[in-house]
Amino acid sequence: MATLDELNTIPKIQYPALREHLEAGDLLFYAGDDDISMLIREVTQSVWSHIGIVFKIDNLDRILLLESVESFGVRLIPISRYIKGVAEEMDQNDAKPNARLVIARHKKLTQAQIRPLINFGLDQIAQPYDLEEIRRIMQRIRTGEGKAVRDRAYMCSELVFECFDAVGLEFAYNHLGFISPQDIWADENVEAIAEIEHT
Image (tube, rainbow, N blue to C red; front, top):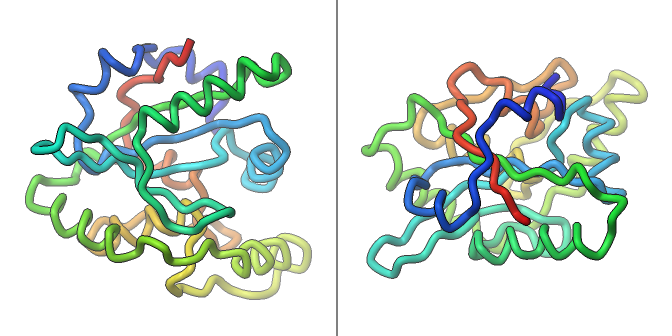
């Protein structure tokens, strides 16, 4: 399990300096300290509570985050807005000093795979968040019974799994039969690039 101390070896870079180095298909990992994030981190025994995929639209000079969130489902949001929201949340609540944003890259993702990965992701926009899978995960944790169901409702990590699976890059489900941000982080082909410094 990655710890916050281990993350201290990753270089911290402010977003404007990091922005030009981001690539389509990069992964954004979030470690939050709000109640929902802490529950996710506890259940998955992980630092991470959320994950999304970087989308770049070069001819419009836009960098977006594809993610699945409880309140909406699958959506695109400007990464700059997402980072600003995290920074504002930290400013408003000094009890959340451990919120972290890290960019990572899949070493085997090729240029030829990026367009189909993005197209698959765009096709999922407005699909619902997978609340039913959360219930199934809780049942498996309590009883050891039940299994994962692949459908078109997504937790954040399921969305990332399906986008990469669509281009032949598969992340391993954990022993409880679900995929979490930690399982993606632990993949040997996922390499941390930088932590976004949001102060």
